Image (cartoon, rainbow, N blue to C red; front, side, top):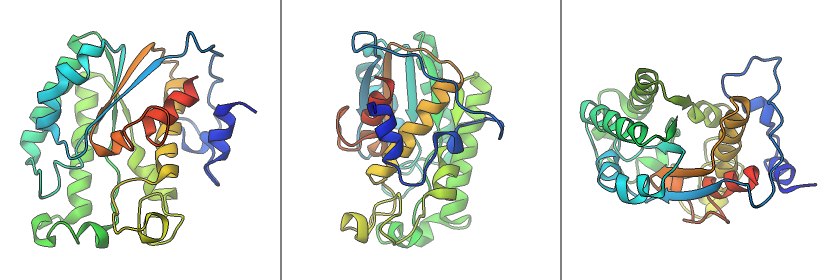
Length: 248
């Protein structure tokens, strides 16, 4: 059994076909081309904890474009919608458009990911509930994700909704099998960051999307905040690390 099969089996109850993006119900993902170690893509983890869209713009050249990606996977917006690093939605949309335009001008293909859901009781221990009025946490997240999807369509970038996968099968809550960190599975009231299995789900969703759409890349930069960063590696516990294993 190869590492790709092991990773898929490691997500209890998850099927790559069941989470494949924009795929007819009767379709199965196309088999990935076999690659040896020499031809496997180089994957960079360019996630930085706490970053919002303004900070991603500031480090775009250094941490992303300087690595000459032919595919950039962009995940941003979680910190923009929260109180500490808040960026109002109109400015977030401007920042996002600038990020997309600069990435595409560099010659890189672009896949934009939605932001993830949160477990609100834990989120609201760190951010005041009044900050999210009048739309509430879910309404704020939905608005951010609509903006991401709209931007992808406008610029003809690819878009992948990982939020709905977490909402439908992520068991968001306080039980140990939740795909977001909580007291039972991580020893903390987090409610935002994925568990290792959550990172596996993101990676597998991206892998299935790339496979189904036959998107080839030799240099992939995963660009974003702490949800991209994970443990900061490309060989341990982050979605870039699991994606690298799936592509190898």
